[in-house]
Length: 255
Image (cartoon, rainbow, N blue to C red; front, side, top):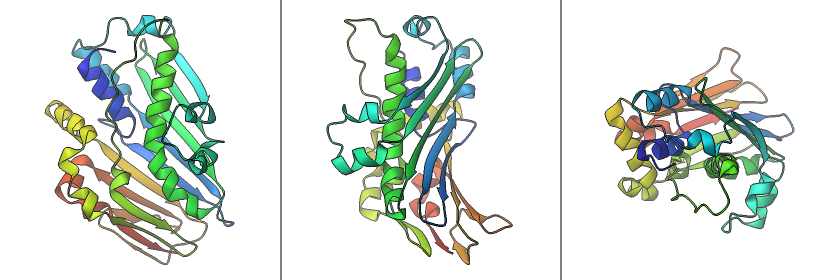
């Protein structure tokens, strides 16, 4: 995948899409267990890359001439992540990553799903989600790589969640901007890559959906909305608004 634009496309796939949003959904059960899932649809981006003539000519060969529809157990990927702690490996053990890529029909989507047993696990899983999307995507695409081929350059990843501290409790969920990290946002290689794509009219968006075990009592946040039954909170954001005001994605939920 030598095309720079395609590399940026795959980087954006770890957390964003162009015309469609990536949705991260947290489902919380009454006993405090649940799951975190992240879904992205990059079909429109694939069409754009094709239209611009930037599709790597050997990509289909690397895919074995076939469409990809694969599910990878995250446990099989964690061994190659040297910086991952034993606790993180345990959290990811039962997670899955699914990739669908068909160059003929312009289908390109990713989904991961990771269950948790405790509310205290959710924040860490949100942080790990982008890493595992990146690793899962790379692993799936590398299946068609011929023996002896070298590794591609590391792709920049985009993870806005890393700029926040989120607390999940029995009665309160709160996200606050880490101002120290945000002060260095201009040095984020992933965001630099996304900025390069802004000339193409791309302003990647993301949504966090939290399904509560009971009705919310109070919801605060510039971009937070509450469903009619008061059990679902959606927080929407995009790169441009994040760079202008990191606090725009902060929220507080009492339930």
